[in-house]
Length: 513
Image 1 (tube, rainbow, N blue to C red):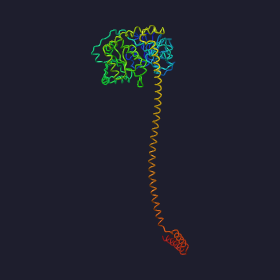
Image 2: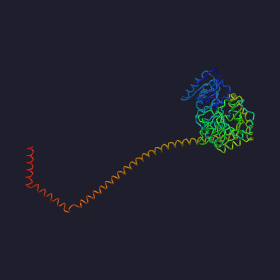
Image 3: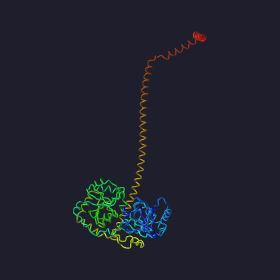
Image 4: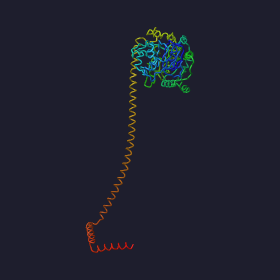
């Protein structure tokens, strides 16, 4: 737990997953909503920016990892001892934020405003349904970053969610329409700000800009892992990394000097590695571009994403694919002088709608009322008929996407199991093949040996036959006569006398020795 401790008693709480700073969209938006945060306790679960946190009079880090519900409540109680908390703004990204908000509600009876900026439940199940159901049911006010986000959560949970887009401070709102020189329009060099939130999107963008011969100046790459690229290789692909500009006013001024701004998003196909972000989120850079620079937008990605629909609905840019001809045509079209003027005039008229007019008070008063206190964002929401149609279409598409994703995951698991089983069978087959080869070799050796024995047998049989042919015809009679002769000789007196003589001779010889 990290905590600085000014003297605070009655405070508000803002809960988000990570550090709040200028290095990501949610951090920027939260600081715009609450320009004075000295009376706010900021609670986060984890650090991913080396502890770079620039928001709140008190900063705490509370994680519920490996804790049961009761232990989590006890941890929150200990951390917030001595404070009185009446209002909570929860921006859920993981279960940690939900559990912390519910614990504060249980301990202090605080009113909760849930502001869904990133979907982590409908398309991605990082937050379980039971926790999200409890959070929404106990929230006095629910806000969504895009009309599509509001649609989907209304359809799933039956909870009214109100559209609240990213806003800008008054000093960034640009009422003047810049006039670009013919040389700038002819050069057709675009701009890009912030991160590209997917390695796949960045790869597709680089391939497309290189093939189309389009040049892009990239400002504000905050160094996300997948955004770290060799500058030389980026420049070969048409993208020049310009570094991080220190202030938003400087970014705004730079954008005014470009004929268009590129926003890369997902294709919503099987290769899209961040499709939930594409489907429902509205990047805070879009209102920033429109309201602070009036620069037209070229959105690269699927036209059914929340960002693409927002751009098309307001007429602040055009949509194209990750395709050489599509991007080339978009750039040629948007750099025409009269087209530039049309887009910039339209954006200038919309700019005041994104002004941060006491947005912190607007949120807290709306929380007390249980609904928005005014219709300041109504012009940015599609008409009711289109709204209902978009609801049915988007949720049906998302539900089908989720089903297909689940089926694909199941098929991939089955394929992995079958591949492993096939590999095992192949190994067994290889072993059996080797064993069979060994038996075949032994069989060949035995067959050769048997053949040799058979040849020897044939040779012996031939010799025996020849020997049998050489024997006299009366051999049996001759043998019988010989046996009879030997028998007569052994029974004669001479033979008996000879036998006795040999015995006596043997006896004398032994005595002489």
